[in-house]
Length: 138
Image 1 (tube, rainbow, N blue to C red):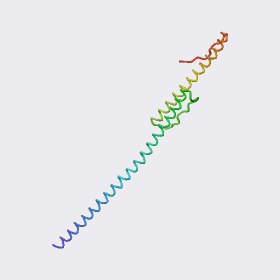
Image 2: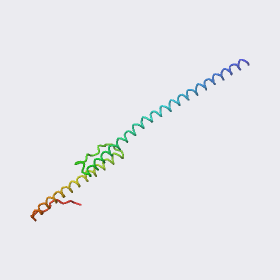
Image 3: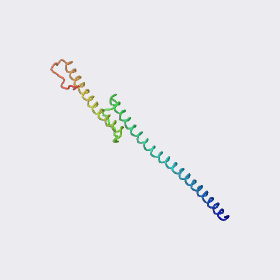
Image 4: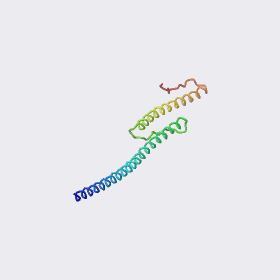
């Protein structure tokens, strides 16, 4: 009977050691998993934020060039070179299209103004036969 008790005590000690070892391994694996997850999240977050900042920066530069064109600091507007398929890419494409349309309308307006100035100069010299041939379609 004493022998059985010794075996039971030994088995209990082995079970306690196994349980302790298992818990240490689970704790270590959990810590490694949490650290790995955190590092991967930080790396992915960095690249996502970097991409967003780059896209926003390109839209900002494009809008700045367009406003410089409106202030007559530039002769031509360079389209926003953003080829992404996300919302910023769609917004850049819409801005590009509207910028081209506005640039064309402004150029037509400038031509009409120049033609009108030319016509007025001729009329001022006494000739009433000159006519404006350019018109703006509204």
